Length: 130
Image 1 (tube, rainbow, N blue to C red):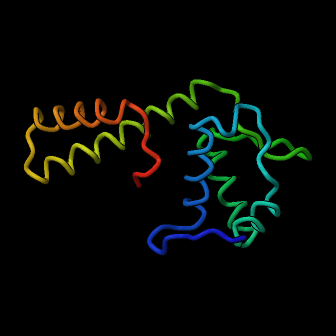
Image 2: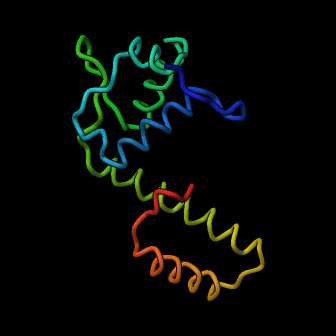
């Protein structure tokens, strides 16, 4: 079963983004073993070299650790994982605010709109929304 990839972004980065999202959502916990390079390549429908590049990039970022003969594991360093989550949150907020301001909304209108959304939605994610 291969995954869909965007042509505008390198595949190894898209795979890394997906794995990082799973780590941040705690679907993959600190110390968890990632699929082998071959296994993830088959699941994703990509060349094993692409997955190896993904793992190498994630290791460079400190998100995973490769243990010779054992595989690749999610780091157990909470400060690194929390830093990634904070950066992702800030990036999303930054993009959201820029988009709202591009629509001509004031800071007050953005805050009111967000508050209304959270009250109407009960603060829970509505699975029917994209």
